[in-house]
Length: 122
Image 1 (cartoon, one colour):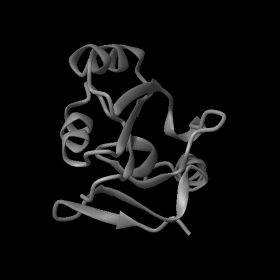
Image 2 (image 1 turned 90 degrees about the horizontal axis):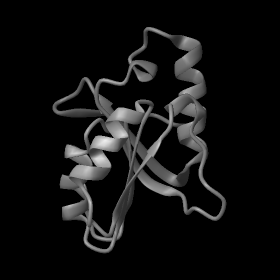
Image 3 (image 1 turned 45 degrees about the horizontal axis):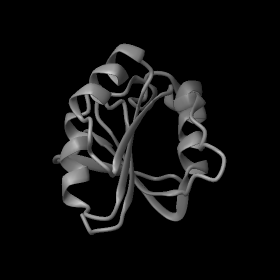
Image 4 (image 1 turned 120 degrees about the vertical axis):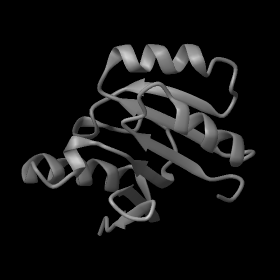
């Protein structure tokens, strides 16, 4: 990971991976989203004080950038049902929302590779 990246973690749970990524990107920024308010509350508590890390309750298929929010360079998801191929319409909506939140060169990585595999956005 290079410093300065804007990273979106989809399905962040308690924020463990988001915290590790934030520690590696220096002046970059990580946003963790999860559909579970409980997971986001836990992540917010466990990661309090990290200046380049925040969390938001959002289902990926409904995710939208906040007004004025910058696009993301990279997104990753591990064990996210909307991206696992079992729900084609949900996956289509999720991929569109991710695409809308990414820079033109943005990349999405999901589980199923070694350790992750890239999922085309375009």
